[in-house]
Length: 192
Image 1 (cartoon, one colour):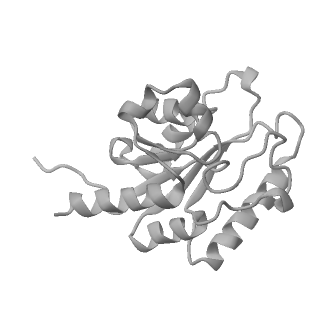
Image 2 (tube, one colour; image 1 turned 30 degrees about the vertical axis):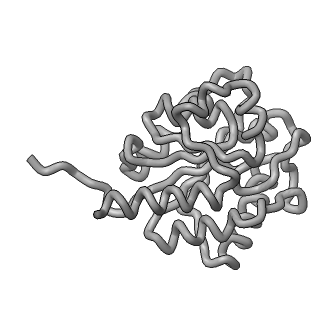
């Protein structure tokens, strides 16, 4: 019996703390969105290797009134524009705009955003890396059956302090660029 295989591999990234610097005050405007050095080149590298890159991000700042959906769209336009200048692109950005107390299914650590991605793109989550910087990213990846990777930018150090047990089983990296090197090595070895 033939197994269906994804034609192009997908990879899912968190946004704040992985691609761009995070802020306890939220990223409320395009001016506040600043890429972490090397992150945009790393995404372009994934694209060149044939990966389709998706983002899954909690954006409760919308529900909290810090910015609206139009402003979030402006922030994402800046991300896409700056990424294009590095030769990269994002397939789509999936986000949860809800307040943590709303109890939605899309806010990480729940796997709703990842299930939306799987449904829309036919992604085999079991073969898909999800790179995040926080415990909720890891929980969402595990709940959806993805392969979680943790970066130490953003909340990575807090995760190390609070959940050292995760580092026994989940690969961790200094930043997105080094996580991408690992992913590309894994991809290379799976084709040998």
